[in-house]
Length: 510
Image (cartoon, rainbow, N blue to C red):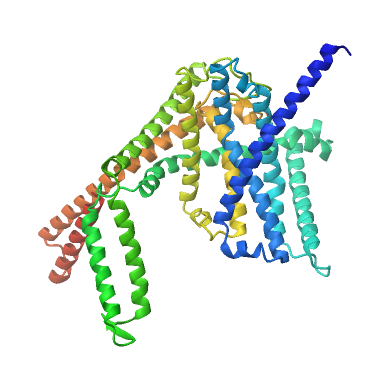
């Protein structure tokens, strides 16, 4: 072996070690952030048990660690495309810079491979084991303890895996035909079991298709609640004066109370109830006073500017997908598929350069947030929504699985909709259904139509409800004037009651 070969092997070894160090630092950072997030949402009672030294505390601690790993993988899957796009643009702008020599294609390729591996590991092993481990109590008649729970959870997980492999073995035998009817379970594991992840990924992408349009419409309401908008839709001074008057009234009642309780509108109010009401009123007063001191620009421009930005990025996303549909029909857009390695720093991913790449990242992150908001806005999924210090361990496990499915399908969604031109690396684009033109075309069309309908309904539903309310008032008045076959008193009171109630409702909508 000559000197050049030794030098090349040393260079490969040093690059590998450097990539492992960078990926390790990134993983540790995301793990710490994920752990802090889960501790914020975890039920306070369980959080206190973690430091009690009991058996249940150890079980909850281990389950929390597994959930933290899953959440870390989910965040890494969300950041796959943004990190890849940023890396490509940085290498394009500074191709010979000494300070970014560590940023290369092998590093990005390794990140994609690690996220794919750990997403499968968390989905098929870690999360099922975490659930079985928290619910396990040990085998009947055996010695209780932590190892008994581990053995029971492991056995249930193995049995579940064998059942899934057996069912998939039967399905693959039926689909493959007689020529592969003698295949073994090992063949199923290495050749056909990856199709199971393909099916799960397909359903995850369909879930994104269902949740994202709903979340896009819901984002306007959520951002409206998060943004402080005093004096834009209501008069803060009037509300503040009313709250101060109620506070003074409660203080006077508490100060001049002679007996333990008094009668207020037929209800006996005690001093404790008055003090609780006083605390609520003082909290409202402090909130209104803090909003009163907000600057003029934030008070009057922040809310409409944010709403316009949301509308602009939503319309921009729809236009990108429409452009992708046209390119698919013309044959200028290739179907999403995986590549073994993508060279970075050769060409920009957008015709607008770095600005276009930044817009791609903004749209990708916006779609992810919208999909999460849309998922928790669905009728039966609101019960799964985590709440600070009130979320049980089972709910945390379920939320981690949901976030893992949505985040791991985000790169496929972005590539399928044409949001980015960055190729899918590793196994992310190895699904067979990604090579079906009609599936990709139908997916893009459904996304555009559903998102546009949700957006139009969001902005026009109050107007339609107001028109319907006014028409109902008009028809009610016509029916009363024609003298319907009802009693005079009952009919008149019913029509008047309906008219007044409808008018109030329409006024509220306006």
